[in-house]
Amino acid sequence: MTKTRPATQPQPLNSLFANYQLEDKGGYITQEFQDFAYRLAIELQDMEHKAIYMRMAKKVDRLILERALSFVSDANAKSKAKLFMWKVKELKEAAQPTPKPAKK
Image 1 (cartoon, rainbow, N blue to C red):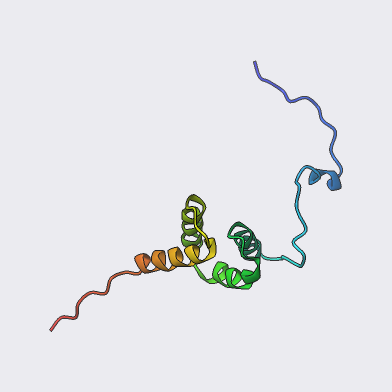
Image 2: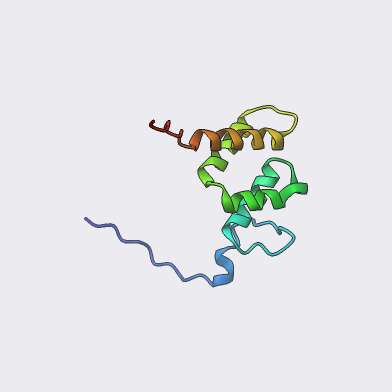
């Protein structure tokens, strides 16, 4: 026995996104990395330096940023932004391959 879906009426396009409570970010966020950086600045409570996070979101590997954010969200620190920057630096250094010694 196969199940069939009940017939539904198509919804108008403007009502499709009504359930998503998107907040106004106060500007034009057109790229995905900009949105990620904005959310990062909110999470770190550092809206003053959101341009730095945008630059990082564009240039630094996303996995490193997400790991650092996870580390910071689990920690209880006075300055989440400073701890985040430290962890990003540590993760970037760990990702660098160690140079092989030169043969003589």
